[in-house]
Image 1: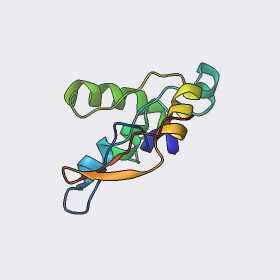
Image 2: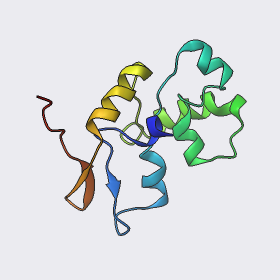
Image 3: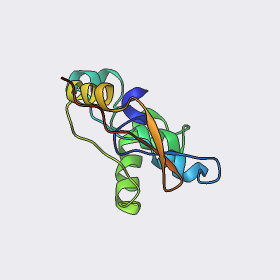
Image 4: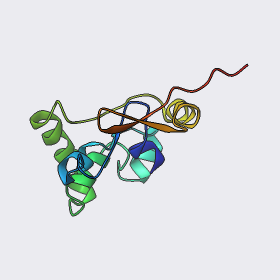
Length: 113
């Protein structure tokens, strides 16, 4: 869940900014390692489709994801960063938020001495 709902450039919206569609598109597709993708039916790389319509069966999720990429290129979020690097980035940079332009964004971390 952390890897699909959190990253340094993904805002958290206030109630008056949030809509179902915006919320669904503020999730991130991240591929796992090939064996994990296979064993977990590609949920990492089809997570946005899961939020748009959780009734899409796993065997159509990749097809649905391709349609989403094609029709909503400005809204679709994908991060090809290897999972262990993305997790380290999130764990070190997504600690606290500040309000900016009606959205809550992650503060930059303090430099480590």
